[in-house]
Image 1 (cartoon, helix red, strand yellow):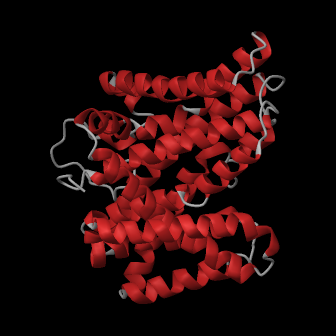
Image 2 (image 1 turned 90 degrees about the horizontal axis):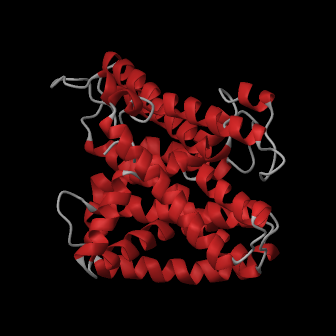
Amino acid sequence: MDCTREEWISHTKAVAILLVVIAHMFRGLISANLYNSAGFKYIDFTLASFLMPLYFILSGYLYAKTKQINCFSKYKKNAFNNVLNLGIPYFVFTIVQATINIFLSSKTNGTVSVINILRIPISPLFQFWFLYALLIVLLIIPLLELWFKNQYLILAILIILKLASPYVVTNIYLIDSFCVNAFYFYMGKILYLKNKTIVSNHRALTFFSLIYVFLNILVYTKFSYIHNSFIINILEITLALTGSLFVIFVTSLLCTINNFIVHILNIIGKYSFHIYLLHVIPMAGIRIILSKILKLDNLVLHATLGLVFGIGFPILVGYIAYKISMLNFFFHPTKYIHRGKENSIKIIPSVWSQ
């Protein structure tokens, strides 16, 4: 991949957030009973097989680039800053989106109650589950590293938790989400420490991409006939890992086409956090206007306007937020708090802190 300073991460974030927006657009159309074809279901299956694991892998990769925490006092400082950086956007934008959902409950897909809002400290809503889950991982993984010191022992523990997750469901989101997602996060760290050159090795990326395409088709066509939870879990893990490398490979190919595409990916990557937080609201608004008010159900129109507003509106908000520091607090709290300070406390980076 022809990138310097590991720019592939920013480019991959851009492609990943585009795929997230596409996935949520299709799910919104299906939930609204506007379209419900087999092709939509296959697209949803494909994107779901790797998208969020990819985000955890990228976060783990960035986590590995930082100076590791070697004492509990440093852990407390970093934990506090991570709680601010992920917790404040989580609560603020969950409440905003939930409130809009309640007021427009007769027009939107699904319903949210005040009880659901009161439960967000223990039960996340909408796409914001990822912020909640990533924060939990960022709080627990450094503690495991302080206690065990051996990264392979930690990886073994996380593999066991991942494999056991279908059988041991506590219905406590904090525990269940860690068991399911921490493995991918730590695989990102292992990727950085042991084999980070794979992201620039086109032969290896091609090989794993072909494996993903083959397994993707096989699992989708035969998945309903597999009832063994262990086998299903292994297939899901394999799809997630190879699918993540597949996205990195596709991103590398896009970056070789021309500089304009690279420029667009840089912009989208810069505002990927804003897009993740805000894309659902404008897409739902466009869907309501087109289907409920204008009575239009043209797929191309829905898809085009949904993507334009789902990406464009958050970028506009993000641009304004960078100009108005107080508004930027809701997206990047510690950057606002420590603005102008050369030696401000550094946090452990997540996929959106780069």
